[in-house]
Image 1 (tube, rainbow, N blue to C red):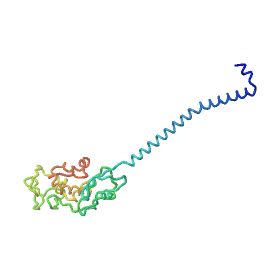
Image 2: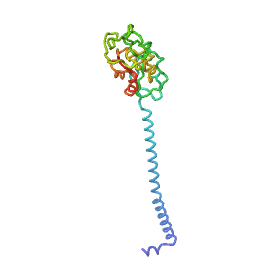
Image 3: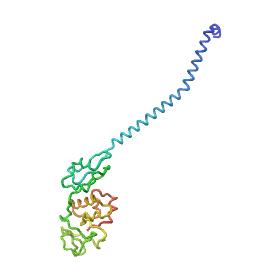
Image 4: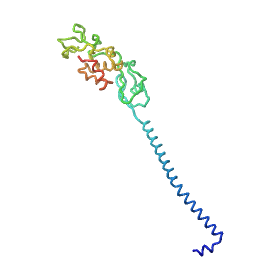
Length: 238
């Protein structure tokens, strides 16, 4: 080996040394740059993953479905889908629009629609149970001396137009409103009841007859458990 090296000319020896140095330099550069390249690739991959997840989340939000239950005086009552930002009026249009008997004054068509909401459109001039519109005395108490065709007191009980008797024991609190005789104005006077909800209560009476118990109030569209708890102390059933 040494003899071969001695036999090399100075030019050949110089070339061999330079070549060795270049190889060593390239090897060092490769070893130093490889981790940086791997780290850069890792950062690039992480950024791409984050962008992909963000795009999927936005797509999911865009594709989210909302539904509302449209009831009352519309041509095609039912559950209808809508997009975020839609108004109540658009959902009523989806349900075929208002009927001729609808009282549009009691519905806020410009209100923003919310997921799982109930949109109830009451009828014009809702007729109370029994076919008359007689109003009970202020406060909802029954007048025992009344000769009206409305409810009358019979031996401490209350008899309705159909002759059925609801025995109630002691006289009701005059500060409360009788669900079976209250007018629209008396219902709206109760804290928490607006024109739309008052119309829904009257419509329930028109469709189903008298309230037999306070819990029947939960059957009125728009009155859930929480609303019922807030309202029950303002009413009585007789």
